[in-house]
Image (tube, rainbow, N blue to C red; front, side, top):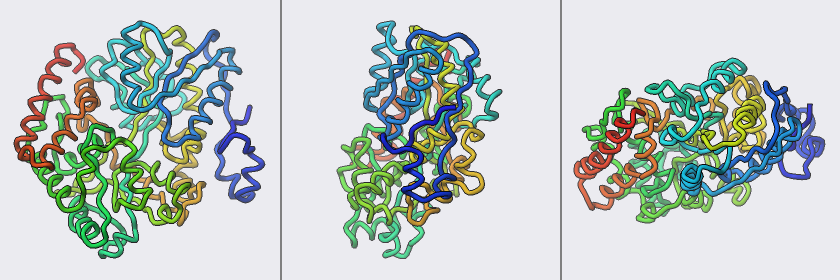
Length: 456
């Protein structure tokens, strides 16, 4: 067995133990890398394309981890990273060209690529055989029940918690932060008006706005589709959610949320200028490095509940690897994914607990016993600040909820119909009823197209 490198380049396991203290540090470390002999003879080159992770050191670890596996099995591994917004266009370009990478990682479901990728049914079956049951939302993000096909391999996901500034909420009498969507108005309004700090929920063409719109709609009892992929967006529940977002904007936010990029709410929180954002823990991890005082004041909530007590949030990120039909080394691609999954405790640790596993058996230290979320290895104050992540599976779902993340849902997500719907109502361009009706007019043809293709 060979030991993987962790933390930063040049910091050895021994140095880490010395820096943070003996036995406690040892207990916090993931296992050494486990190498299992591949089920087939491998050779050649494996080309991997994936995003530049929000936690930079993850990429440093991953690249070394992948190359080390390749050296062990006789495969040259090349890893390329691109920005989040370049992933889908790059994938489309490679598919159209019929050449490119063997393995491409996306951070949202990509069922629209099913006609252009290799079926991963056998790979997913082998993963269950080795690692036990996978998280339900991982299956719903990678499996098409209509075609009975795994178009992707989902190795992990990221909870979408609420990040709030405890001191600000304490000043308005809500020290433990919001528990309901209505709390964002009732307490967020005086925080903005009296304390000068706004709410940070986007309504623009970026991933966090997409996730926030869905969480709000679900928590009000609405959805884009039902379990059978029938369009259900135009409902009283969705209209009520859109009307709520308009009121929330008017009472607790500023117009900058209409032009945000994916990092904008993170930046606002880190700068101490947001009372609440809906995001992963990546913004908090960045604050620990650049603004420790703000980081100590950031705490977390599970999914906020709506008027009937429903509280759901989409996974913030859900990792889906695809193997395009043009892949020249699909065998190596699939063997590598099994190797990554077997060592997923390293992925979780080197993402600073950003990544959660699809197979919890691979990362027992995350939630079991003296676990990482209850005693953060990365210096949270207090150490159990991330304990809310321990229940994340209970209140997390996928973008197609209550159905699967099918190709139509994927296109609706990629074209930002829901955040645009929210923005038009919030700005007063349309009434909530008109904004929902317009969104429905855009969504129905998308579902019809993919139904005609036989994929929903």
